[in-house]
Amino acid sequence: MLQDVTRKLYNENAELSVFEAEVCAYEERAVLLDCTAFFPEAGGQSGDRGTIFVTDREGTEIALPVCDVQIEDGIIRHILADEADERGLALLTKGAHVRGEVDDARRFDFMQQHTGEHIVSGLVHRRFGYDNTGFRLSDHTCTMDYNGMMCAEDVADIELEANRVVFDNTEVVVSFPTEEEQARLNYRSKKEIASDELRIVTIEGTDCCACCAPHVKRTGEVGLIKILRLQNWKGGVRLYIACGQRALSLFRAEHDMITELAKQMSTSWDNIPDRFRKMCEETGALKKELKTLKRTAGGSNSPVREVKKTGRSTCDRREQP
Image (cartoon, rainbow, N blue to C red; front, side, top):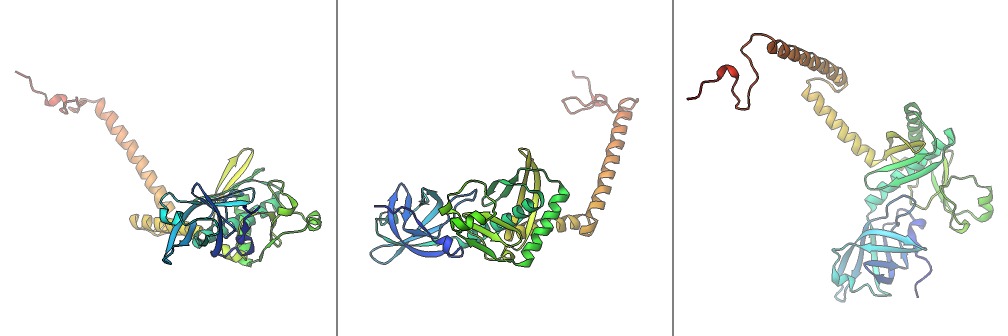
């Protein structure tokens, strides 16, 4: 008989990446375990990736890649990749012992983005009173939607304040308040949550929000918060952000590009805008000069004529025999 819910080890320790578990069931390339450190797709965030290891009779471990993780009615399903070894799949019988390894680099990246989102959303809510109406976190993007308008200056202020929260290295507290505590608690939430399932993530002085996902222990681990883009969205705005390693990778790419541009222009990076403006002005002047020359040549007695499809001008024609 399958247990009612999967024990969520990531709630007990967000940094846990290696664990042992027992197989409850295996069906249609989905492994159900009695406990797991794999976070499933939930709350707008993609599920974890990693590997489940099973041992054969000779003591050899067989690696089974986990390509997706889903949750339904409290049961977490680990979806195995199509290329998973059939020998290993045959060993996923009820009661079998397995070892799981979460891709901890990817997990930490997601924790950086998600905690950064809480910081930004908390500040937006405190300053403007806007609610977060949408959140998406994948391997490449992190976006948040708000039900109110902001301008570029507002966003710049929020970004500066958000990074001050990072530099303060404030503790990120995860709690499961009782019904009595919930009645006194003022927190953000995008949807109604059953009282016995309410999980609160608190950053003192910045945010208090219902959330099911793993987070870093202190805001300093977010590293850096960069708001990349502001977009009008369904009567409000959408923000695109990059935090931690993603922000650093973006900075490196842009720095390398600017350095190369400066080299090509034989100038320093801070002179690129002025040099580019002058180049545009020179290009515009040359285009006008060329246009004038073409117009003058076309309206004079110059031997220059329209070139026919043969590629020869009219002044170069010869009578054919």
